[in-house]
Length: 271
Length: 354
Ligand SMILES: [Zn+2]
Image 1 (tube, rainbow over the protein chains, first blue to last red):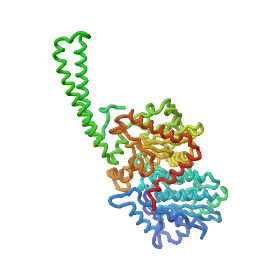
Image 2 (cartoon, chains in turn yellow, red):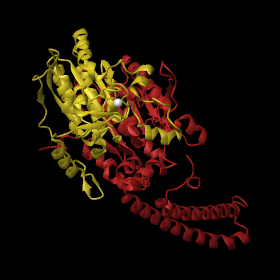
Image 3 (cartoon, rainbow over the protein chains, first blue to last red):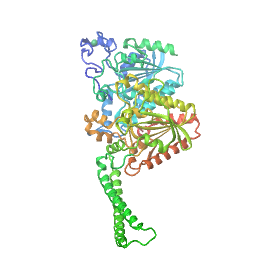
Image 4 (cartoon, protein in one colour):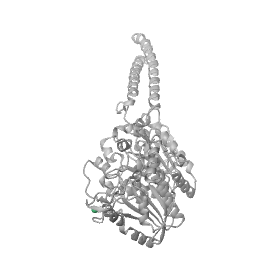
């Protein structure tokens, strides 16, 4: 249910781009080379699902599944005359994906795994019936094939346009985690900026190992809601990866440039 | 329960309460007449009434009969009015009934639905959350674990229960006691009534999301029957955290939603004032939720809402809970867990055909 922060766009367009961490003007190809992080200050820019898969999987190993899954507008949810159904169609066309999560088989440094990556640019990465279905499918498929499952979260929470059905995705995906746990392969949950609401409060918090990218916003309630409730300023660094590591809810913080190495290292330990 | 006079009534209930007031006035007048008649008749027990009484009694009796007829008429009018108002409640009005200051809370059902309630405190980790009650109880001839979200009637109670908003220790307490229930093969009954999990700094610091997620997962795999009922507000993840169950019920005027109508309105309509639009769009009423497959059944409320007849509401809730547990009696653990998994795996699928 969160909203994107200005300047944290997924793909900066043009030859040059400005870092909203250090304000440096950056050459786009340099940023891409650094996997969409700032070469100057290390700021992690948000990336979409396809890009996430591309920088995680060994080249040519990704076999997508579940791409045919496409949602509808079960409630006929309409805001000021504009229906969720028509917005879905529009977003699908614009983003070239069916929903906010991509799933498939891949190898990470030669190790087979099921990958799922959420896409914050599609309805704020919110979890509706299709995202829930794909996360559950990823975990079930991994369990049935004895494979580890790695899920990259990036989401504002539940997709309110699907009402209580989106709330139920929390139960669906958590049940799938429970099922995955009946096997011996690990479920690695990677929290990226931002991961809040019903996604954090379900599968994302249930990883055998929980990794966070640096400085990612991670929490249950969004900062704005908390501020409105307590009517005072939030402490600096509140709900960021480093804060959660210190409070004991995240196992490790990994820079995007090291992610593949760490994932492979973990998989080797856990398999 | 507060009497009719003490209740802060909702704007759309006003005509009903005005009518109730009229009925109450007539009843008071009737009682006064009855007192008078009794006094006149009993002046000299056994003996014929004194001449003065003999003159006045028929007059009073006539007045009494007249008033009785009027009372009956006004009561019928009141009933018709209530039927009319509650027969066409908007989703937003239902939310207000669910949040009614006189709405029965979990505590009001404790003595009416259960016997021998024994509270067990604490999450064995960091604290004891007043927003969630856990304890052992008898339900009919069964022993159960009772998990219930609390709200308060007065300021002290409201603060103690944090207005029904649980912190991580509340969910961890629920989880710990559910494991206890599993160990002793006790079914679990959950009463849901929360505006949502507490969105505060301390709650985040102690892992609100983690506590909710773990509680949901725990309920997905718990090896005893789980029955839940939304008795007031089913506020988002904070409700679901004790709401994964083999049978989920909702009271007729309760609601269950992914986000509060106000919260949804402020994000999508850019104004909290549009909460009634959001309430309608979110499909949060009992009938909608039954259609969506989010709940398994609706517990009908007494005419005018649960707050108008708490005893009757409690009787219906009790019958529903016992019925559900009877249904789940003797189901082998394996198939219980399998059907629970399939239920949540397939929720809403019928709406996405094609
Ligand atoms: Zn920078």
